[in-house]
Image (cartoon, rainbow, N blue to C red; front, side):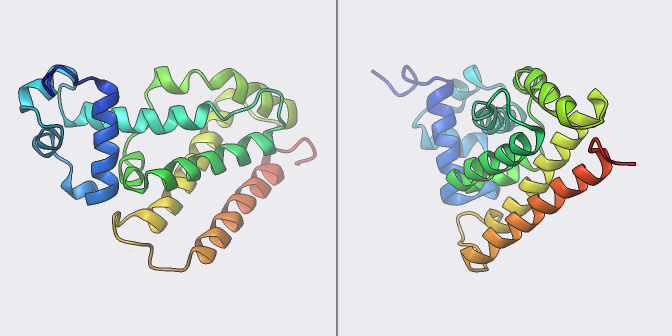
Amino acid sequence: MSPAARLDIESILREVFDLLDQEGFAALSMRTLAARLDVKAASLYYHVPNKAALLQLVADRVAAQVIVTLTPGLGWRELLSGMAHALRDALRTHPGAAAVVAVRNASPEVFEKAIPLVLTSMHAGLRVTDEEALFLVQSLYILVTGHALAEFGEAPEPPVAPQAYYDAWFDIAVSTFLAGVQARHGADAG
């Protein structure tokens, strides 16, 4: 079977994550990806119309990996903390994807799967509108992605600081964010 015959979205995504992790965001192009898959660019374009669509697939895959970790029935703090850790873990697994996730939002059809769970959790413990709850989730996503860019932004180069520093910075950033949410939107907030 020819490489083009074996080509599908999953094989494309595996290769794009490998390319991002091994060579970094700057190396990503449709031509480079096609060469790595041992196909002509036309075969790749049959499955992914352009680079923007390819980047969207990466952002959606990372978001989907985070969303499947969300547990119904958790309090808002546990839900958001779990989301932050799941996003960092997903980006730690594929550090080259941090640069993509930083500039691409998850598609509505991917993110919408999490909305009922997020809103139920956040309304149970916070005084927030639906819009505020979703903005808080997006703000946390941006915070963690920014941290990941600092930690992994030069993939495949190693981080510039010791791992313990990134771990401490992450813990401080997330706990401070959650404390701010509590202070501003908690049931006992003014």
